[in-house]
Amino acid sequence: MSNSTHCAACKYFRRRCPEDCILAPYFPSNNPQRFSCVHKIFGTSNITRMLEILPVHQRATAANCMYYEAERRVEDPVYGCVKIIERLEKEKNEMQRELAKTRSQLVFQCALNAQQQKQQHQQMIEAQVQQREQSWFATQQQKNNAGGAHVEKGEPSWLSASQEQEELERTQVDQVGQFNWLSENQEQEQMNVTVFYQGEPSSLFSSNAQEDSLGWSNMKPC
Figure 1 (tube, rainbow, N blue to C red):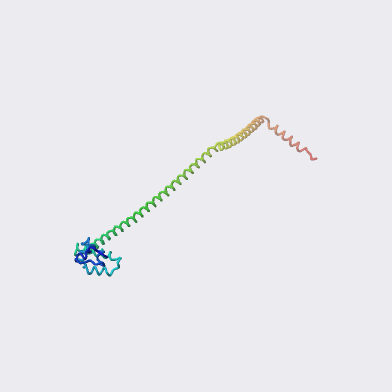
Figure 2: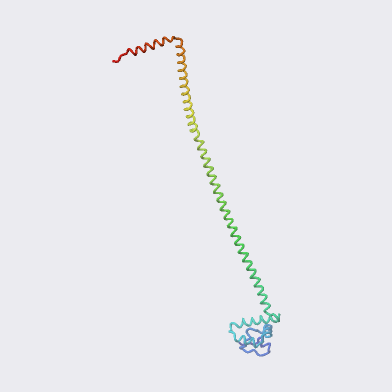
């Protein structure tokens, strides 16, 4: 790597920057504060050794980590990046608690919605059952009304039958009354005959009776 200018490390130490300088890609000369923080915390020899033992594709990440940790340590010499880690850990725990609370609320709301849907479904079923019962009662009422109408339509025949029965009973009563009237007339005639014959002498009846007896007695068998 040919550098017309020195890297931040070589510039800091005021030395010539070689072509294979391991610090040049990660600490450019236009950002001397970056190397100053890292050098102050870790030292140039430690930085160079850590970069040499790492693969090439991991050296940029390592340089960034060292710079971040060194910067935090300059700002807070006691805690350094630990304070940031602790703050982030606290925020993470708060976020986890908030997430758990949100999940519990979500589960509760889902259960509440399911219960409400179940109640609505039950109410809908009850409404359907009630509607069917009302329709069934209405149908039965219509059938009963229709049956009453049929009975009313059949009433004249029933009345005619009852009238025929009454006429028959009336005829029988008239016949019985006529028979009784005839019987009473016959009794009256017999009474009249009896009264008529009461004025005749009893000898007439006795002579007639004797003649009848003699007549019967004179009859001889053939």
